Length: 179
Image (cartoon, rainbow, N blue to C red; front, side, top):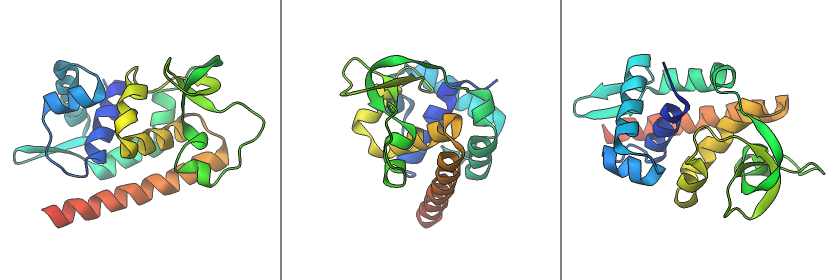
């Protein structure tokens, strides 16, 4: 059975754009234990969201894209909460903030004591996400787009789907060129 951190781990692998990785590196960069990362990769392989190619384990782009677009919002429903400090997500962060004008509503945020924005609490896929994105803008984009699908309005979801499809197409092109 998939867990939310499985998707975070796969998105981290995608953000590295086919660069080699180790369980320890991913664990450190995602603020998880190596055993959590290992278990996440195993579940992803079992679910068909990742594939083994020789010594490498890579996201299965087609299946992962389909799951993110059509299933994720029903399996990993975000919890919304009170006004708090944190890191912006969904339509309020890049790349979606280029397409949507901020309204009077507080933005959705992942709660984080070190965050510099006040907004409405929006649960991240995994507790370490606010820390993990601080040094990885590509992972941040993936997770913000996923959050727009998990809990955005129709227009935000549609734009997020369009951008996710574009990102997967780019990843597949990189994967082919490095093969």
